[in-house]
Image 1: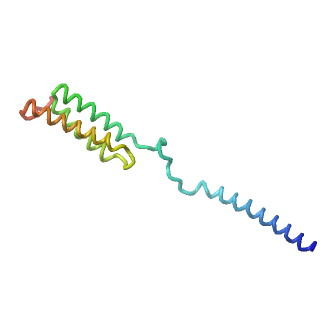
Image 2 (image 1 turned 90 degrees about the horizontal axis):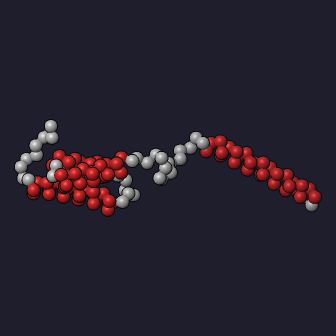
Image 3 (image 1 turned 180 degrees about the horizontal axis):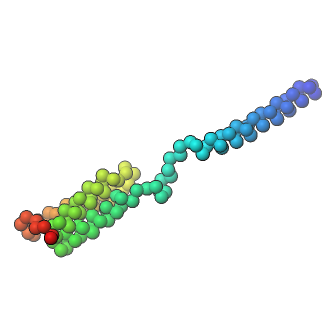
Length: 120
């Protein structure tokens, strides 16, 4: 009985030492494994948000000041914002920005149907 108990204790010690070595090896290898970036971290691309804001500013300028080139710039910014957005982002905000830019183009051409003159 005593021999069996001693053997079991020594096996438990070996298993415990083996676990320590494996965890140490796993920690060493962990820094070389790929870790996906955390959502909401600094690696997020702010381009869609900036283009969305710029598109809304151009839309308001196109609507209020009747500048056709601002309305077209708003449509362009809305397309860029939509193209660079992720699927997890708010689609209602994208849609409202796009509809605002389209309405700026429509309203500027309804008020003055002449072709757009270059701003220079």
